[in-house]
Length: 145
Image (cartoon, rainbow, N blue to C red; front, side, top):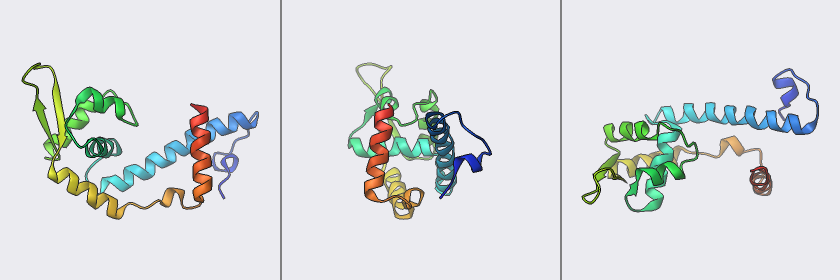
């Protein structure tokens, strides 16, 4: 089992400070693993998130709706969608009513990529947790927010 104090060679004033630093440290660790995993599919974790949002919606969505649903609400969501469009994974559907509004839909190629990712995806990052512990962790994180 990992020990944050040893991993970063540090002591903490109290367990609340240690917990906060541990959350930040773990978030960075997960991000690093995600970047490595998604790289072989030619997408970033944020682009994957956009594709999953579109798949889950089952219909074209406004860009702003996608931005609001993203896990990592980065201001560069439009640029991420531009890259997905360039890879032919999504379509842009301009509104005939309001030219400022653009709807985004996932293409067949985007759905196929999600299937390939799902086949290779494993819960390795949480393999040391039981289902009960995973629920407890999720509940605690919800409580923090």
